[in-house]
Image (cartoon, rainbow, N blue to C red; front, side):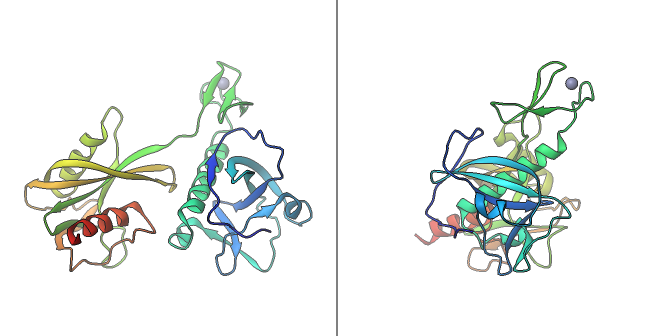
Length: 277
Ligand SMILES: [Zn+2]
């Protein structure tokens, strides 16, 4: 095993053209093999060859520095070392650097796509991996099936020193966050923001500005983050997804996500920084 060098840059690629020895992260049923202290573990090819672990799939992810990086997928019944545990990615949020989060996010989505696409939706026959693209292919119509990403918007609505934050029915306790939702087919990101905000809290917004994005592999969202200003309307939670929503002064926020965990936290922190500057 080799330690994770947080300075190494990860470059996603679909086909490995390097002859350098590879490194793997290890996955079983959407959980990563880590140390008992949740440290990320990278395995050399030789570590895997001489271990007792048994694998069903191995997917190339890209390059970590110059070395090819893979996700190796364990068989359900494979033994693992007593010093290691399997950790879901959610439990590692905030404890791993963004570069490793990106690799883990890519691993989950590629493995999930691969195991969910073993048969053709057109003719029902088994399909195989394309040789030169990240795609599954069926011989019936040379149909290619690529990994699917679902774009979502996530938006912090503000009114001067006040932030509009909402409590989703599924959130624990008094945890609040920004508003978010899936972009519908045929819809622009900006229209989706206006629609979602109005549907969820009955408020109209203006001056939408793009902030940044984050891959969110639960299971395959790409979160597009925005700031927007309040225009008109009284907050009224939809009662379906959102059970509570309110304006909070930036100095008296409830429990919210932090920027090292999610883009929601980054939207909040960047706005507060702007107010303080
Ligand atoms: Zn087919």
